[in-house]
Image (cartoon, rainbow, N blue to C red; front, side):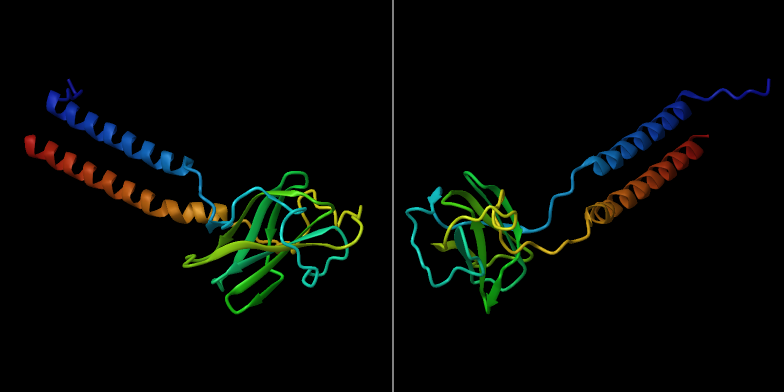
Amino acid sequence: MNARTLSPRRTTARAAIVTAAMAIIALSLFSFARPVQAAGTKVSINQALPIDSSTFSEDEADCGDFGSGVVWHFILNQYSGGAQLFGSFDSAGDFGPFDPSKVLQSVQHFYVNTPTDDTLTDAYVLLDSAPGNAQLVLSHVCHVGEASQSAEQSVEAGTGTPAASQPDTSLITAAVSLLPTVALSLILLASIGALAYANVKARR
């Protein structure tokens, strides 16, 4: 007969190779399925929330470029890198990302406008580098005339200095982060195959 019957040892060795290969492939697929975390270090406002604009400290001399509604002036201290402001109001809803309106050395200023008095329920910045001693605070609010009904002044999310449009790099980031896993999987697969083959040859 021309057919070859594998010995139990050879069958076991091949089964081990197949099992190892399947485990490595499963590990690689699991890595692809993991979500990619957004870049940036979050620093929350260093004040007790909520904050009601009708009772908060007011400064009519610094209202940004807004001519109506309520202006909320946030300051990020002791940080000179890239930063974007996010947050939420009880009535106006979520806002951000907003870039700083002005940067003076390591002090960054953000202005957010709501059409009427509101309550701040959340505020934070995302930083593009280590925060160090960065600290976000609401400096003051100011009431500047009658509330505007225009889309630009009425934030259903606050009006501020919106961030410039950025390309979505999440897929590129995901691909780069997976390269080490895939490379390791291939190396392990090749090593296991070589060892198993050598073991089979030695037992012949």
